[in-house]
Length: 295
Ligand code: SF4
Ligand code: SF4
Image 1 (tube, rainbow, N blue to C red):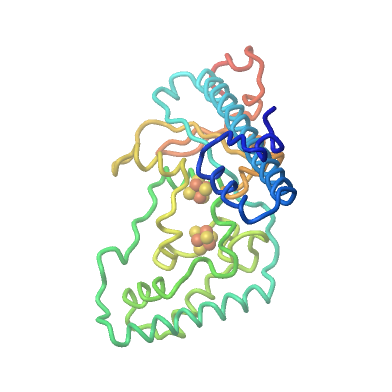
Image 2 (cartoon, rainbow, N blue to C red; image 1 turned 180 degrees about the vertical axis):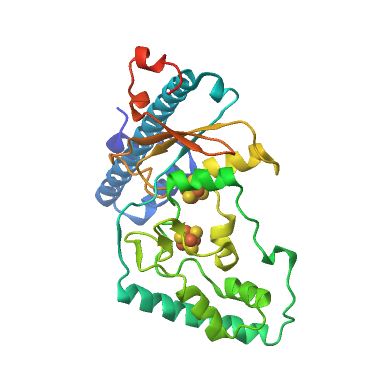
């Protein structure tokens, strides 16, 4: 018999580091306490293994669906999609509401703290601009990709927006004439009256309300898998080939939630010139519809 009881009797079934760790506790407990501990550990590990198995199955099902949708979109578009890159993006939240005063106050307090910390060090440091102080702008295609997604990676920004003393130092080097109070005000001036309820305080109607030079390094440097693939494929040059993008319903940080509704909510063709939405029916279309010509 394989199981906790048999194992407690000395049947060391695994030999891995986790298993050795569990068995290392044996000398610290009597037989019945150790058996109970062992059964709990086995249940926990089975639970984790089951979760991993389900996640894997979910990922594989999603990948099969992506392949079918990309193929349907390719057939629908014909030559317009020749050589298209295929990407999947998450979704940003879509629940804007008037900005709550308490959010603004928390943000103000955070900004004042990090600006004071930055001013204390820049007073003794040379306020020279470093080449990386001016963050690179997104290409039009990158902007369209993030626009279609709607800021799926911004939901953890909260009322701090990842702004740190390092961010402030960079801004102060770019604007040496600004006092710490001016810097704080520059951020506050850019908060929109309506913001996404479950996202960063700077997540407004048209996306991020901060210019890149005021955003944190975290914001400027982050690229989800889709954006990262696009950047690598473009390799610094404007990408001429189109991109077929599937957008899923959940955000970047919630998309692995088991059992959550993560259906496809948009399919689009992005090019250097513009964005074109494709019929959502392609996600579940019969072969006849998929074989239709361009819209
Ligand atoms: S980086 Fe990715 S997750 Fe973030 S807004 Fe752009 S496409 Fe969405
Ligand atoms: S500051 Fe802008 S880019 Fe950064 S998390 Fe907030 S909304 Fe997103």
